[in-house]
Length: 186
Image 1 (cartoon, rainbow, N blue to C red):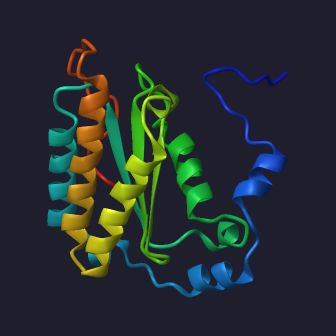
Image 2: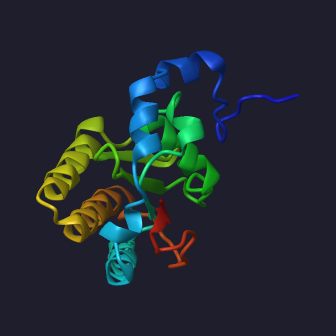
């Protein structure tokens, strides 16, 4: 029997319908989108992002995972928007599975030019949505100026500042629970 507890949230059909609105236009856009994530973020960019994540995670127990996706897979794009995809990746990559429930997923979708931030339950009650929305807006603004590496690095540092403010008094040993390297999905 599956039950709902504090550590798991089961996405039921009504919740999925709130997030995922079927869209043929979105499906077509993602279906026709050429793989681009590696074109926008080369090896040096990926290393710079990994270094930024390592720096932003210093001094607190927060964990940051960056996911850069060219487009939502065609078999999911009809029903799933970027918010739903970010939540799916948050679960699949285990960002929620940190000791202090301190995971943050920074998700970029290049096809739709959208940024989503998914935060774990340990942070959710202590922060406001306005803070996360401002970080997303800043990343999008820099992406519009075609400063892709700078956009992600700055977004990571801003997330790190929020985590530092929230977790500054939590004692920790500096173990790294999530990889610092960005996950690139074409």
